[in-house]
Length: 259
Image 1 (spheres, helix red, strand yellow):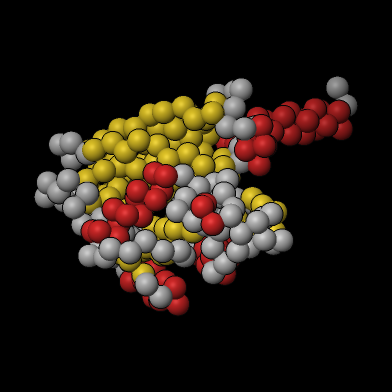
Image 2 (tube, rainbow, N blue to C red):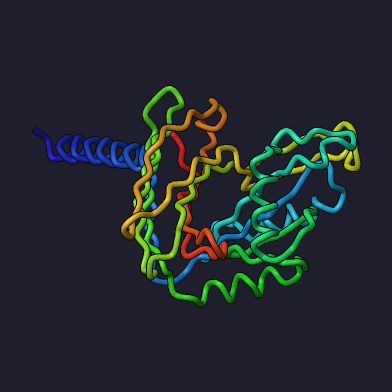
């Protein structure tokens, strides 16, 4: 065989192998925590709140892929739905979680926009950056391995293993699926006429698993919409102290999409 044809076939084979490896990489997203703590940033927000869009934009910047020391969550609450616009991303369980965090932090009032970093309440959003830096300087007190795999027909299988390094504190393993690049044309309420962009929006909030004997395992299949399969979603896992709300470690697998 002519040498040129041999090299041509070898090149074609290499291209096929590269494509196969790329497809396999797209099928499974894996994230493993490190020795330093990653700051979990939670924003409680609402499309019915006129002061929330600047905080939403702030969270989009905070959670940019380049910021590897941050995991961002936008949790839309429902207690402003009554004033004229029902937030399509709002869920009562997010309001319940905000109420729990406020109580653990010694407060009583729910409001938006409302930031928490590592479970700690941040009353002034100008202080979020400093809180992230402080959290990121702490050693991780938990280890997390997260894997998300597409199984066809929009099924995303999520598996998480967690272990803690604390002395028997009551801990929970939390898992969420978030979506970027969303937007809403608001027709009523305080933001009437505005088009609001959103990133890191929690679309699936999965049942927490309590750590026992120093560890926990989580496994669940989440059904994604065709648009979510095409664009990809982010999968987040974190370990939190049930008494103090301190987040001991967090990880995220970004832009998991079907091959």
